[in-house]
Image (cartoon, rainbow, N blue to C red; front, side, top):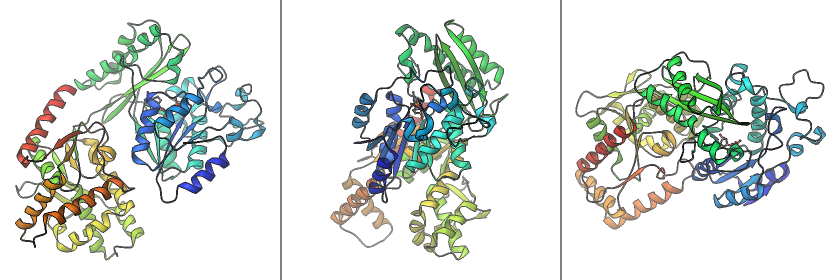
Amino acid sequence: MRLFTTIAGLRCYLGLHRQGKNVGFVPTMGALHAGHISLIEGARSHNDIVIVSIFVNPLQFGPSEDFQQYPRSLEQDRQLCQQARVDAIFAPSAEELYGSGTGDWGLEIGVARLPIPDSQSPISTTVLPPENMTSVLCGRFRPGHFQGVATVVTKLLNLVQPNNAYFGEKDAQQLAIIRRLVADLNWSIKIVGCPIVREASGLALSSRNQYLTLEQKEQASVLYRSLQQAKKAFQSGDRDRAILIDTVQQEIAIVPEVQIEYIELVHPTTLMRLEKVEEAGLLAIAARLGSTRLIDNVVLRDRQPIVAIDGPAGAGKSTVARQVAKSLGLLYLDTGAMYRALTWLVLESGIRVDDEPSIAELASRSQIQLSTGDDPQITTRVWINDHDVTFAIRSLEVTAMVSAIAAQPYVRQELVKQQQRWGLKGSIVAEGRDIGTHVFPDAELKIFLTASVHERAQRRQQDLKNQQQPNVSLVQLEQDIQERDTRDSTRVVAPLQKAADAILIETDGLGIAEVTARIVSLYHQKLSVSR
Ligand code: AMP
């Protein structure tokens, strides 16, 4: 692992190593804990190169805040990064990142605070996200904080130019502002939000927890309990702001040492105040315990469950997914049919298969609709731009071209977006490559369906026979499957891998009906626990 303290070192390293590789980036302020490590692990499993920045950014601290005391432990952070297989740490000084004319940052924080539109000596070009996102929630109590965050994140993203950047959902307002920043500036960087990592008591991990005594840590766990109370109320039908906020307030009141700064209900993307949760709401808290400021939140989402089925080629994913959807009365999100629908449109439009920019444009302008078929022969009906293509997408021409179209990164990006829109409502069974790790990382039930190479080769041979295709030897089929597995699990875009929280089902010797029954039973078990 490398450690760079200069921009030149980082740029040179990336210049030498990134050719054709995916870069994942995790910005932090150091004093790393398991929350940060979960971000790094997320980055590690989806990227070839992982860069972590460690920088206590003076611009995001107010004059009476804890910039000086903020914990710094570079040597320990270095070891943790090494263990987590980080490729390089970028740990610049403030002078390195913002220029040398800025003096002693420790003393000039008042000058460094943003925004300073009419300041005589602005210290840096500043990035101002929309005021209605920066002035609410924590912004009310920490003026200039999110402008400081946006400025440093902009600089770091420009320096690293990652494919993917990882941020914790613990800082939900920061995450929403950064998503907006990246969208508004048209960066093609994927911002990945990672779930909050907590102690056993429920207390969200934070570098600032180091300020707390053991007793205070115990007291602070009331924040989590209060959010859980509100979540329960939400699940039993309470949607109104007043009720949800009151539930949190009453629970926190049990621990008088915890002083509430705010309890707010806003839309998780726009941060607009909500009177009522329609599709989703972010319930966020900031509180003080002594001089330590703590934040926590929960996203309340009115969404039906998602079942995500992943696994190697030939394990029976699509047949099983169809059956599971039928048994549970959910929609089978036939992702293969979506790629076929687009392929049909490409053919109809007379666009050449290698004209990727035109296909990207077509994909981004197209709307694919799916619905459960009423005929037992048709699991899913498919429309593209209002053309019913349920049958047309099964033609030989489409079959011959679909994999070339599906391999195009922009097509994939666009269709994943459309699939995720389906995910907002839930009530779906989805199957396909990286569906549980990438497309629906928050699916209620994730299954990784697999079978030995030998078993899959036998099934393939049987399929060929059923389709009256020429016979291929078992040895040849096993070799093909082995090669396909290696290719699928080492490819740069969406490699095949089991999500950490997916349930592995080994299907050797099991029929479709048995596998389906097992998944249906897991679904009922899971739902009865989470409801
Ligand atoms: P910080 O070092 O506090 O600036 O945090 C760096 C990144 O780690 C941010 O994206 C945080 O949201 C994320 N993070 C901090 N604490 C947690 C946690 N308990 N769970 C998940 N992510 C976290």
